[in-house]
Structure formats: structure tokens, C-alpha cells
Image (cartoon, rainbow over all chains, first blue to last red; front, side, top):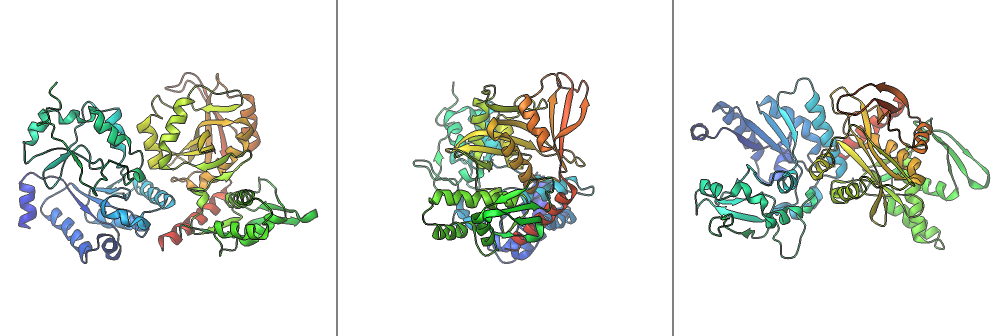
Amino acid sequence: MVAWQSLRDSGVNRVQVSIDGARAASHETLRQKPQSFERAIAAIVNFREAGFSDISVAFCPTAFNFAEVEDAYNLCARLGVKDFRVQPLMLLGRSLSHEHIVPSSLQYRALVSAAYRLKFSQCTPAQVEWGDPVDHLIRFRTVVQHCVAFANIKADGSIDASPYIPLIVGNVRKHRFSEYWDAGLPRIWERDEVKRLAARVLSVVDMGREEKGIPRVWHDEPISIDIIDTHLFQN
Amino acid sequence: MRNGKPIFRNENVLYQREEKEGYWTFIPKHHPETRELIINRTGKEILRLCDGSNTLDDIERTMRSRYPQVKGEVILNDVKKMVAGFSRLGIVEWEGENPFLYMKQEPLADSFVMQIAQESDHGLIYKFLEDRDQSHGDDYSFHKSPLIVPGEYGEVGLRQKLFSFVEDFFLLMKDQTIQGLISISMPILPNESAAMIKQIRCPKKFSKEFLTYCLDSLLYLAVRPIAKVKLCELKNEKMDAELEKILEKLGFRLEGEFQSELGVDGDIRVLSWFYKPELLAHIEKVRKNAFVAIGRE
């Protein structure tokens, strides 16, 4: 409990836990870790007890768990989860070699249909969202390119413009985050090289597509620049 | 099962009769308003192979071996046309997924095919709508709902529609390019049950068949419960008479008129097409069974 509490005291006010099924068997088939379902549930309970009110759950649909989405939602709602986010399984990193578990188009339709039922039911305590991982890649390069209030910092300190394009634009171990911000990070989507990388992706299946000279996200070493060291936005 | 297997359901046939020279007439049980279906001896053979043990590829292979003198392409088209058409009318059901609802194309005449758009068709659709926004020849049926807001079919808006299945796009293709499109949006509000035709852009010679394909397929695809499909038009900007006649023939009827609607320039006429309650109940059952079956894999 101390760890959860100190996390909250340090200023973290929103947490997300992955629950990939209504049953341990489904969750652990995807995660490949015994007891991981039990531990994920325990994490939600502990966060609640530590006073977190903004807990969200991410559900990753597969061909073997998509029919459990309503039960998984109900389980999370009972645990006091605020948001239940479902996002398509993307063929990136490890999942590249598990194409057979990607839901079919009709299975996705069944899933979205269930999401609408939950959304419109009179007694849904948690919000449900069918999240689109591609939307921002189109939106950022077209309608809001001049000010994008989004940045992603990875565990190694690197900053990317999007988790779904293979481009690192800085690292908080080199410069402070606020320095990157002031150096033009919110305008990174004005750059043609960023737009070009994003424009390759118009659908989920485009994400894992191989293209000569372009690293695959979560698979190859990304292209790396530093917007401060290269004075990218000096003018 | 992704590679589904078609099954002929005799119990879904209201009436069948053997005619002269090996022809057969069918009337589907759940589409009594339809359409008499007439098939020849080869069609009957294809139907017999729809026994739940063969995939579409298996059926095609068997027919090729039985008719080596016929071009493979012709056989493939016949198999697809027959199985897809009978599936839409509920006479053929599927053990597993019906591939015509997401990956297979249904053939028409002159190498045209009809297909249901997927998320990955975003680029093609965007370009088609951009190129053809205003330009249509006289040989095209055209309708654009007056309720469409500016920018609705921009890159972002189109992506949202495709990804969330809030609007289904039916494509008429030839040589891998879009030649026509019909889009139908889902109801937005919780208790609403009317889908809405947003756009029709289709060569006139295929308008009736293409619209029929969309109306038949929509029930199997819809992510919200629907009971009817409506089409709104401005009273002072009526669609061309031929399209109106086709809609009338299909069973669309005037449901109402709205005066001085907010956000549109004029009064609106609403034409609607109603699904029969027995068809809705039947498809609900088929979809539920399919959902249980594919969830079990």
C-alpha cells in the first residue's frame, strides 16, 4: 500500500491497467505470464484503496477474447474503474509473429456493437471507449499541426512525436522536458519528415508494414534526432 | 472460423419449383417482398455443394473439375454471384464467417464488382470523394444528403466513420478502382433505429442492383440495431427522376416532410425503406449464432 500511496503523493493522478479478458485464462494467454490477471485485478483494488479515483482499463481485443468484452467491462465497473478503453490489436513488436490472433473485421464489428450497447445502457457506471490509434496520425499532420499538446516519454527517457511512428525527437536525460517544449516540441508536426512518416499510416494494418529504409515501430531502431541539438526550430 | 463454409437452408425457402430445362425458381422466406430467384442446373449444383463441408474455394475447385471446358474465371464468378446472392437473402447461411461481408467481392456485369469497404480503403475512398465531389456525368445516379456538414468527409472525418463503423461504405469497383459508392450512416441516438443514406454515386445501369446489395448487406453489418433506412433530400433540389423511380420500385416511400429545418437551406423530404420484422428477427438470430460460434474458437 505504501508504494501506491507514494505514487499518488508524488502527483500521479491517473493510472491505467491492462485487463485483456473477463477470465484469467484469456488474459494470461495474451500476456504469457501466470497470475498476471490476478495481479492486474489486485492493482486496481490497491489503486482504489490508495485513493485514486481516475483509474482506466485498457482491453486489447483478440480473436480469442473479443466475445468477453462485456463481461470484462462489468468486472471493471464493479471494481470502480472510471474508463474502459478498447483499442485494436496492432501488428507491432511481438505481435508481428502472432497474426492469427488479430480479430477479423466482423469480430471487430461485434466488439464495437457491444461497446455501443454498453455506452447506451442506462446503468453503465464506467465510460467505454473504442479508441483509434490512427486518428492522431491523421489529425496531427492535417488539422492541428501547429500546436500539438501531446508528447510521449518512454522508459529510457526518449521523447517521440507518436508511439506509432519510428522517430525519436529528444531525450529527457539530455535536456529538460520544458526545454524541449520551449524549443518547439508542440510544433513538431509542422515538419515534413514527421508528416511523411505519419502519412504512411492510414489504417491499423499499415502500422506493421515493411518499407525499405523505414524502421518498423517497436521492432527496429527508430530514427533519432534531437530538436535542441539540431536547432530544428531556430527560425 | 474465418474461412467460412456456406450452408443451404431449405427451411429458409418459402417456395421452390422445378421449371422446364432444369431451371429452378425460389422464393426466400424472409424476403417475401422479393424477388423470385431463378437458377439453372449449374446453380442448383452449386447450391448442393453448400452443405457446410465446403469453403467457397472448395466449391469453385469442384465446379472447375466438373466443367473443364468452361473458363475458370466464369466459374468463379458464377460461384460467387450465386452464393453471395443467396446469402444476402438468407437462403444460404454460414458455418463461420461470411467472406462477402468483409473480403470477397460480389460480381456484376462488365467486370464490375461490389464490395464492403474496410478501414484500409480510406485512401481510395478519400480520393474518390475528392475527385468526384461535384463532377458526375449524366450516366450517374447522384444523391448527397443535405444533412452532411462541411468537412465531414475530410481525412479525419472519414477515418472516424470507417474505424467506428458509424457509416458503412459500399463500393462499386472495376480494375481495383472505385467507380461508384453508396454510404449509409448508423443511428446516433440511443433509441433511434433509422440508418440514413448519405451518398449515392453510381453508374445508372447498376443503381438498382447496387442499392439492393447495400440494403441487404447492411443488416448483417450494422453495429447498431436498425429497422429502416431513410434518405433525406431538399424539397427544392430533388434527385433525378430515374433514381427516384428506382427507390420507389425498391419500396422507399415518403415518410414525412420537415419545414425550415435548422442548418439546411429549405424544407426536407424524408423517404424511408422498412425492413420487415420477420427479417429483422431472422438476422438477429443469425448474427447471434455467428457471434457465439466465432467467440468459441
